[in-house]
Amino acid sequence: MTKQEQKLTELLQPTVEASGFELLGLELVQAGRHSTLRLYIDHADGVTVDDCAVVSREVSAILDVEDPIANEYLLEVSSPGLDRPLFTPAHFAAVVGQKIEVKLAIPQDGRRKFKGVLTAIEDDMLIVEVDGKPYRLLMDNVDKANVVPVF
Image 1: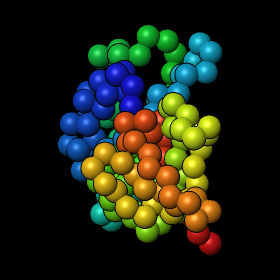
Image 2: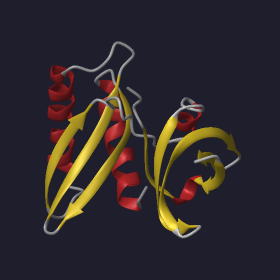
Image 3: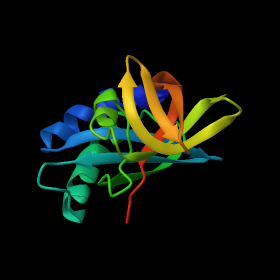
C-alpha cells in the first residue's frame, strides 16, 4: 500500500464504518492525468448496488471537502466479488488453503506474479505453492493480491 493509499484509508475508513460497512481496502490507480480510486466494502449480509451508492455519496462528500487527490479521479465503490482482493494479514489468514494470485512490487526468483495455493502464513511471509513448489513471499512486497475463484 502506498503512502497516499494509507492516508486515504485513514481518511475514509471512519465514514465507511459509520455507514455500516467494512472498508476492506482501496486502490488508487493512476492512468496518465486521470486516476481511479477504487474502494472495496463488505458487510456480513453482503453488499448491494444500493449499498455501494450510499457509501459512494458519503465518501464523495469527504473527498470534496478534504481534496486529497491532486488530479482528476473517478470514484468506484465495489463489493469484493468472487475474486476478493486481499489487503491485510487477516484477509490472507481467512483464505489459507485457497488459490490466490499475488503480484509483487519487487520481483522474486525472476518473477512478479505468483498464482497458487496459499498454504500457510509464517510471521510476515506468505507461503504460496505454485506447481508443487513453495514460495515464501514477503507480505510487505505484495503490490496486489486476490482470491482466484474456482468454478
